[in-house]
Length: 185
Image 1 (tube, rainbow, N blue to C red):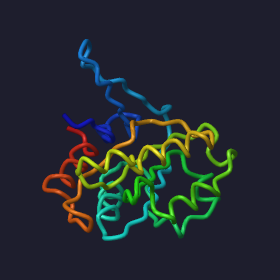
Image 2: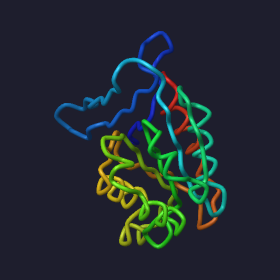
Image 3: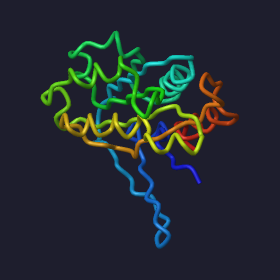
């Protein structure tokens, strides 16, 4: 079963965004919930790179569905000030050769520890579901590792979304699955 990554809180609560990291535990089966401090609207920055439009579609769906002040921007257009102002950073990339795209790698290499210290983040990727792809790994985990090394705090487990073949499109139900994860049930 897929893990929920993002879900908005009902509008009558004080928390504008609820980021959930589910624990895959056969004993408890319960989710570990990470909630943001009360008060104010979160400034959320969704950064992506896309080769065939699949990761871009997911990033834009997140931006449309998440409650709060959300900016969705391509990795090459991000400046350090944007990252410093964000309360939550969500970074996504297609997986190419087991890694994020060069644009995302360059962005992550240029992030200062001051920019991410104490900030929450989540990472996602698009990937093919071929067995050999697991050998090289996936972009989301490498993005999460880089953001953690820069002082960020993971608010959700890295998440992958399946595309059909190298160019896509997204596999049936993947975009709907993402929106379902974001929008409160």
